[in-house]
Amino acid sequence: MEPQKFCQSCTLPIDNMEDRGTEKDGSKSDIYCRYCYKDGAFTDPGMTLDRMKEIAQAEMKKQNLPDNIIQQSINMLPRLKRWQVPPIA
Ligand SMILES: [Zn+2]
Image (cartoon, rainbow, N blue to C red):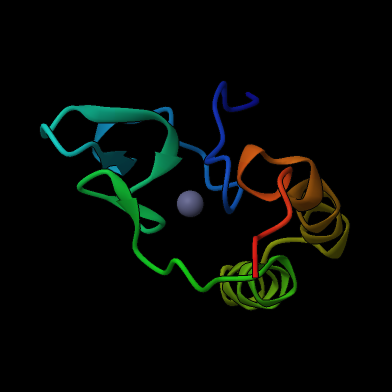
């Protein structure tokens, strides 16, 4: 079964409410996971797309996911909401 929702920063499935990040008012984020987003802000605001690719790849390797699945997720990263807007220097 395909997960319905992915974190728009790192592709983690966020179908479970407990995997979702939190807004400032304590409500759950619809689009980001708890690792990326907490209390209405990114946990690591300095994160770059390239760095996220490395981290995501390492995490998925740890979980022994097949290479084609890992590659699919990595290819998905640049299309996620967080990475659509280039960071302002
Ligand atoms: Zn995430």
